[in-house]
Length: 93
Image 1: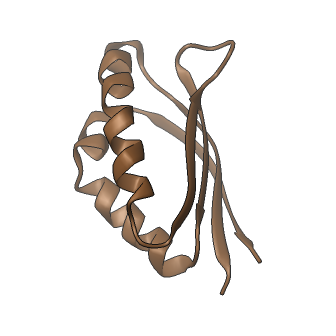
Image 2: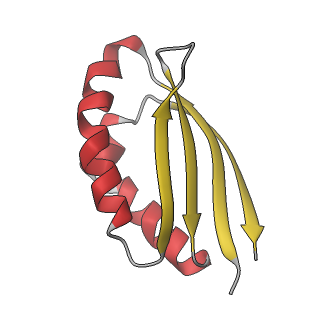
């Protein structure tokens, strides 16, 4: 099977920053419980308080697509609708 790796960052508008920080804990927990999630790390940037670095690994395309679908219909998806996403998606071994 081919792993799917997403790397990059998000930029959160000042008006959404408190909500995003608050909901991030639940989002991480729910994602790590998803079938096929191998790694899910979101960390605040050390320089820019509006930037969060993202690294995700899923065991296959199906698990990644399931995650994306869950996020779109979740509270996290609602709270982050104004967030700028800057991602690279790669396939690993």
